[in-house]
Image 1 (cartoon, protein in one colour):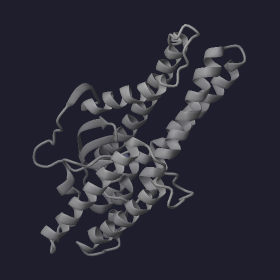
Image 2 (image 1 turned 120 degrees about the vertical axis):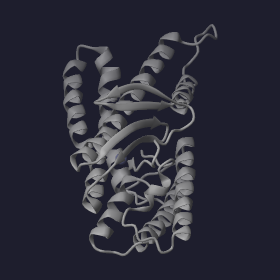
Image 3 (image 1 turned 30 degrees about the vertical axis):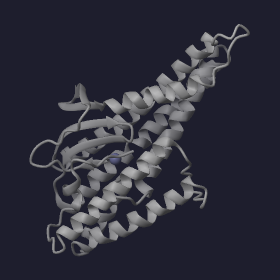
Length: 281
Ligand SMILES: [Zn+2]
């Protein structure tokens, strides 16, 4: 998703600039590395031991390659998503300051322009990147399938990798567009549409707050098997717990922002108050 930077560029502790793309600095958070190590450890725990009681190093190497490639795909997918927001911001006459990738996804700090229409375009530009990404991975998946008959590497690594990458595009597009929780992309789409429909401020933010609370409750119920949401299988995973807590904090901050500015007549969404904390999956 994208957030509006404050007067100064928001910076997060433990983030490091890794490269620059089209003039946009890309940062990685240290927790992303920890998340990789956690996933690798989980995968290695499933590696069988040899009759001598030693780890099966070939299986361990395979697990390392699979987890590493999975992270590269995730990294690239989220990066393209955030670049989509940045490109959208520039198309509407705004600017893009930087991109942060962290365990909960990515964050594009960019300044939209053009009012509600501009916000809407920038919010949709990120999820829209999953369409070409999906078809690119589908073509690679077909190529891997064609080569799988003569190649164990294609059969055991690239075919499942491409298949999971295709699923990732669908998951991220659905999560960002159909989960109405502040500050996911869906929330910006909704608030932009409300503003285009002349819903007065802060009513648009109050509607978004209500939707966020209801959706977080549904996601929590789904996570603990109290409810089955067929269109959004949200099961238990440590990162899902962290994500839910983080969304709860963001929603609480939105509540505080509404309380502090009950007569806020700025037509920009209250994301302005979240510019140091928002993220995206
Ligand atoms: Zn996004």
